[in-house]
Image (cartoon, rainbow, N blue to C red):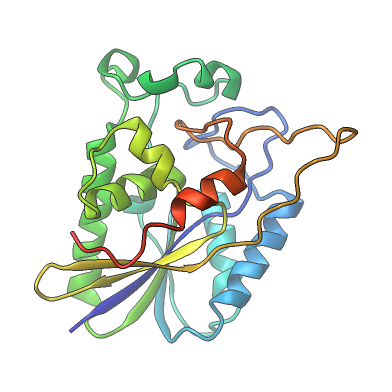
Length: 236
């Protein structure tokens, strides 16, 4: 029997210092992020969910709670398998992180404590196996973070686990896609919902700080969205 997983990225976090917040505690949603989370919850309101899983980090839990608001009685479960990546540049400014470029996951950067792209993929793949055991024939939701989700998508789509692939597969904030987990090991991917593309700032409006991910790029969200639109219904 198929398990349907609706895997979402958390909404926008409050990050006035423009740092790579990683696994730092107490990073809450911004005002815009709370609006994004409510919109995501509304988009998922009609799904017949039997459970909602979330990363233990506050921004993910807040996003998951917005989904749960439309599903009274459905258990909300924390799982460390959904955590953000562990990176030694956590707490540094995004300007410093950006200077790493394609070296962000090189062994000399990660050292002994950092988590590789392959390890992120393996961690989320274990989460899929957990769901396969617990939720046969059911639909569940989960909230995680950009790089782990991108690593999972890349692996399921048979792509190379490198920084460039993560950039291409990283989902927009507060977006969700569906993974059909089949008994024969097949994993089919299809986008379920993405938020509206924000308008470009006028000359009088400053650009917002880059999103806090290890593989953040200077590309605008609408440019990234075009790339994401081509990845649907592919199996591993």
